[in-house]
Every structure is written in C-alpha cells, then in structure tokens.
Image 1 (cartoon, helix red, strand yellow):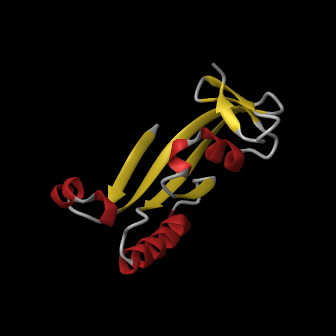
Image 2: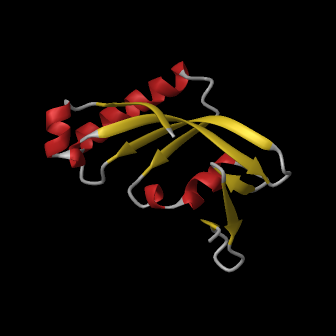
Length: 121
C-alpha cells in the first residue's frame, strides 16, 4: 500500500533507533463506501515516535505542513501515533463520511457496540 516514504534519519541510524525518527508515506487506498461506490484516494500519512525529542517532533510537524501544501492530490492527510497504526478503524473513519464496506479488497464491518470498524472474519 505504501508507494513512497521518506525519513529524516539516515538508514543506519534508523535501523538502530527508529524511536527518534519521523516518517511520511503516501498510499493509494481502494475502498467501497457506504453508498456502494468504488473509491480510490491518495492518503498522506505522517508518524513521529512517541519517544522522539520535542525538537524532532516540531521539525516533523513543520515539514508535514509544507508537504501537505505541495501535495494537493492527497485527499486525506493523517497524523498517526503508535495506537492508530494498529487498527483499520482509524483510517476507515477518516476516509469516508458515509462509511466503509470494503477496504483494500477485504470486507469490513462496523461494530454496533463499540462503533469501530474491523475486518470481517
């Protein structure tokens, strides 16, 4: 799903200590919305580790703002944290106002109790 990504750290340093880096990523996301329309959107992701120093987070945020202005074709711009990366719910909530029935070829359902998306089993 990731088409291109970059990092502020050199590869060697990144391998040794990913917690001090920030990343950007572009993804072309295919889904079927709540109105049964096939959708394909470009999503711009940003992630900075929770243990990153404040100076790195500020640099990453500033760079992300500039990147958003340079990439108007990215329909959705998402700032992620470690917890957001684990669940399809975060992305489904952000990309469609009418709901999501299928995400990247896999059916999803919205749990009526927790109001969160999950992949059907």
